[in-house]
Length: 493
Ligand SMILES: [Fe+2]
Ligand SMILES: [Fe+2]
Image (cartoon, rainbow, N blue to C red):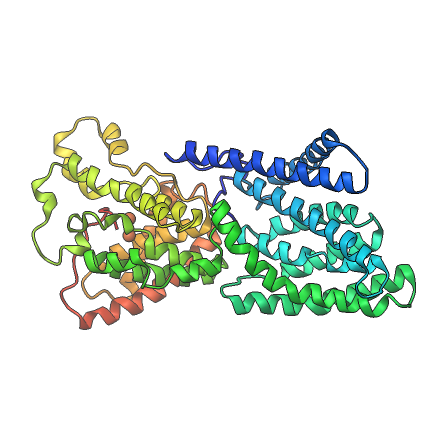
């Protein structure tokens, strides 16, 4: 799902950061620009067939937009795993419109030119819905790709003649494309998903052609066009993905895999300036990936977001215990309030750096949420003798949030806290590691940190086990490497 998940309801407002104004303006520009382009395209189409004037084209753009808004808006409110931000809504509408005109172009240009001397209706089997459905699944989620397939099928079928065979083919081919593009992490898998879709499309085209038009001259071209549609789905999706990522700020798993390379400039800087944090992030990445696999969340997103989760420490690495390596603790010379400011700033700074380097909204939001609104226990305890109002001071020593809103963000939070806590234990046994991780999970749950994500109690139990197992192995190995830093419970892990 897009990182715009926000607790189960349609959120037509983008994120919650200082960039909101800029993003709003950008989205507004995109909306107006796209609407104008589509109105002009409708006008050209209308002129071509002498159907309607320019105002008619604007009205048709509005009507189609209303249909899409109602469809995605209703689904966004009522379908549990569909949470569409304005950005998602705009992206889906643009794709649906594009497909509409692609369908129109295919049927009118090829149908009239007749390059292959086949019945013109057969060209409808070339409408590239499988590719578009794959893109939606990869960038948003499976549930949204099903909704998109239905809406885009209705629109595109209308563009190619509005008959049952076209509608049924589009529904079937789009669903086939989307269902075969689960966890696409590289280009080969993308191409392979298209190859797997091809026989389904070919078979569907032949069956529908036979059912509605009888066995005749249309059968062979229907099979060929159906197969070609599936085979081209991978390359078309690969061409659309980078444009969608650039224009709408998405990060596909393919892009995340690229970001996971330690040669990325940000990770290289982290490795040089904050080696302790770099090592911590690598371990958290391994834990988060194992946790995600155990509960069926997105392991690529978890690993990559974990690699970057503490990137905001680059500017002041020496203030974080994992980089102190036994040297003096700079916080000894600071008031708890000042320490709090320095520690808290790594979240905001991390999100800023991630945006600056175009890591994509999913990674940025996990960075923002990886501490939720949890407490800085160490500094709260240090400040205790100086303060009277315990409740007010507790609020002061909390991270500003937001709390994790996706399963992946929650996994990174738990893996992060577990790694930091277990690192502070000397030569821990597997049982001690297990008890520490269970304490971390319980504390996060009781503190309400997991209230806004979709982790179930069963997920938490499985996660606890998966993180404990990996961490126990890593902690055991660490015995051979004395001299690791000591972390204080509650200090920014
Ligand atoms: Fe952190
Ligand atoms: Fe951390």
